[in-house]
Image (cartoon, rainbow, N blue to C red):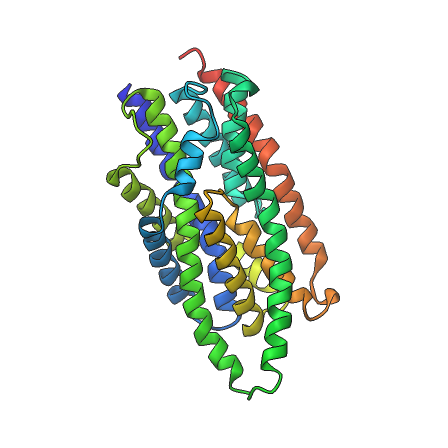
Length: 326
């Protein structure tokens, strides 16, 4: 039993590093493109914020993943390993081909595929599926609309402002970026912890869904390491290829992203932070004019998102089938 648990922690480590690597992109990109901070400063600020947020902002998301998605006994320890491994494989493919995949959706897809093979779809809880759908598919729409409205409102409020406004917005964006990093940590790290808890519960090592401190610190450390290895090609794509992000866009997008992610976490809704922030950035740019956004790049990102859950589910299912007899 110790070897499978070690393997679970190992694939969990790789998942956490990838999660931190992708999650840091959405915070770092807007700070760098709007010239609020230098790249190294932005990465360190994001890493600290995500670690702190995961520790102090609650564990409702972990509770949803650990106890409201899969029925007790609906997946084995080997199945959890297969599901997380499927997510890791798909995200490595995305990283290699510079695809903006959603690592959160990959994790859910991998788990669904593994459960489907091991015990069937009846082991998926309805309430958990509803929460996942709300978090993963509705929140990006909210982010886009809110980003558009936020920048429109900022233009109204700042019309008589002096030329020093951009300097003020750059400083304000540093603060809001740290808050957003905390919000991301409270959601992304908790998803990893929730999945690890499913594995530990399946092994019989733990009998309560309460997340122990040592597991929390493990999750935080993996994501912080991933932050320091930020995916720079994706940073450039998010920060420059949509449109030229100015301080007003960066501030508006990050403010609404922070509110959306924190609100989702308070209700235990697992979200894809990359989708929320990307949608908010698109909404913020559209507030100037729709033609400003390079929609060809957007289509490529949408394809990456649409492929994530089914592809990760296939990987998770295949691996679960291979491990089923072990």
